[in-house]
Length: 100
Image 1 (tube, rainbow, N blue to C red):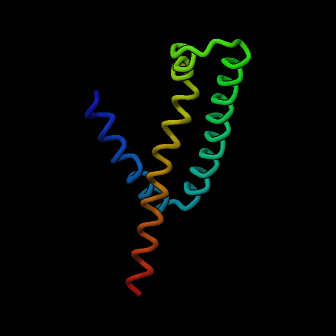
Image 2 (spheres, rainbow, N blue to C red):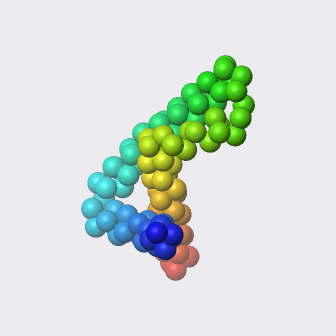
């Protein structure tokens, strides 16, 4: 399972880059999904921290309970892969500029 996760971290951004080059509309779609993911990720984090402070239960189990939220996991996973996709995108653009 660890190998699958590690390989997907490497392979998925490369696939995203290839798809975005073939179908430019996918770049916009990836950007919109990233915006929604940032909103979900930030909102879940803020609400969880607010509830912990409000209820005055600052225990490790309460703080780490946010990791059990499936929306938190999905949005965070996409943002990690999206960040690598954008780094690949920027690197390729810079390489193309330096070759001129």
